[in-house]
Length: 62
Image (cartoon, rainbow, N blue to C red; front, top):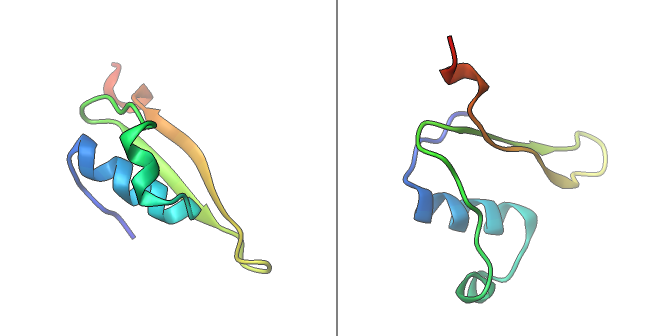
């Protein structure tokens, strides 16, 4: 699945994904670069959720 969003909304998506209380975003956030890719993964067996990469921009370099 691919989700395209703006940075502020991406922080909400990431927080929700890892089970972080959304009211925590008043004191913590995820800094994302424009055009970056964040890879979220769920384990097939235990269904643990992880942030595999955050704000990766290597695809933007030539």
